[in-house]
Length: 250
Image (tube, rainbow, N blue to C red; front, side, top):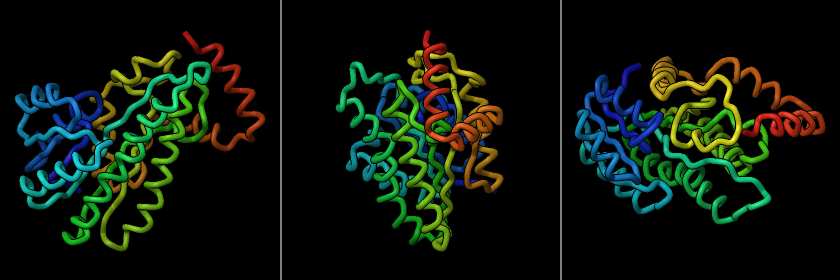
């Protein structure tokens, strides 16, 4: 399955940047967006694409970006929503504003894109929407309560959307990576097993989308571990993760 016209949200760094570089080579036309216009324009100067500044947490920005992409691409085969916020947030210095900011991007940002892209793809008669969630969606992880809960919300939303939109010939892909070496994971206060480069993650995402998968999970060892964690009874999970977290903190 090949995609001619691609729109990527959150393309200025990390996984999004790696995806943009790859799709600039294999797609016919590409639109990239990011809230960081400096990094975005720098990347656009190196690859074949159109670009527009977009803060995915701002509904009007997303409306403008989708309109821009429609104008430049005419048809949109694939939308990738990669924008995300995270980092440690321990409850001993908890900030509800920080939680709101994370949800504004990780959950409501996705909703903003869906609001404007679904009518277009419905009229178009087809389309694929791939959204980067996380393996952290399986449980509530101490020190990452805002991030893991936002990703759980995102994954549940995407699952419901996948069921609803299939009859409209719109495919929804949930991307659930483990640890990827990015500016965001650099903030983590614990060791990250099986961490990989953005380039390797991007290749796994592209292959999963092109292979027609609806859920793209990686790396396999961490998928197995998080699946076991999901199945554990709460009392056992809480005991294990409390001990693990205390040992993993740097």
